[in-house]
Length: 548
Image (cartoon, rainbow, N blue to C red; front, side, top):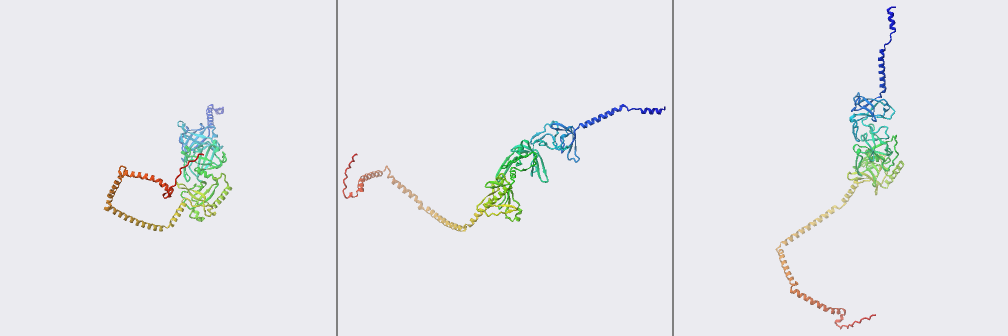
């Protein structure tokens, strides 16, 4: 046997060395570890946010109900650098938390209208809060919220949709009030650029769902509401929170049925009014439209002013002026100003429908025939605000049904300052009819006579001055004093101490005795005048009467 054959035989019987088993086992263990690591990891998600403040790769955790469910792995900028892109690895078994309506936001110290929150992150650092959703569709890319949501999607409560033309009036988190109590929050605010309206989503807590009915009206709660109009001024105060940040309140207007409660899945959309008065006006869905052709000035008359009948409000001014450019086409009193008003029968009766609305229309036509007219009146002397006053007038002008731009005309009469102007004009006309010229002529004659009298008085006064200046007149006071002195001396001779006074008293006493002596003779002559010629009859002695 040759050497070549022996070598070939030895090569055929060579085996693999056991040393190669060590790298093979190591490779298998590494593959198993890699498989185990990959299989134990949860899904990877992508979070998009405007600012990655407080987010640190490898340190920032993702929590759900304060349980760690993931961790941030990387933070980078987007390709257009418009936002930050955060990659995070979730724990195993968290796939059920990642739905289409899952929410993420950063928990960090915040100071808001409800106080200070997130103080526990001062030492531990910020973290990302996960709020699970209830949708069935899975999702791996999310846009993070700037603020924590008002309520979780599965929260028990009522969600309502409101529309308003007041953009920016409310913001997320503003309170929803009912008679001053906070019963919910504003969840979403979206502005529709095409319709130019704002869409709001409100969350009402479950305990207050029954307060929202089909006839509920919503309006802004501005904290302080001061209104100065034709009816005076009013001041309204809401809660302190709404005073700082605003809010929305709701209620059912008076004299309106409460309506049926709104269900949880109701698609009924409500309107957000600017204040309570606008909300009240919005509840009057049935009304009659009329046009006033006003002769007076409309300065002070504004939209929303009341229309009253003897102090009772029956309607509202809708537009001042209204389609004034149509005056020439309608050929209706081109010098008057058209004002559109609404007569709202729901202010007088709770339930109104189309049939009762027609009855009210015919009722007003009969009142127009009987002399019902409208006029402008001053409602507030301080502001000069006007309102429309309706009443029956005496001797009204004839009324015929007419229209202005397809709207019936409400007959009107001048009122307010126009009536004062008419009275002043009538007074001036009467003054113009007075005989002023004759009165002036008589007055001139009287003045001339008075002047002549004054001249005579002046002449008399001059003559009197001349008499007083005469020396003889000046000597009169001395002669008068001498005469008085003589009279005094004469009277002093008849005083009680003077002899003449005693003689005079004695003479008077004698005269009195004489008169007493003559009294019987005078009595006899008075009773029997013939006693002066004949003797007087003997008077018999009186005989006393016998006692019975």
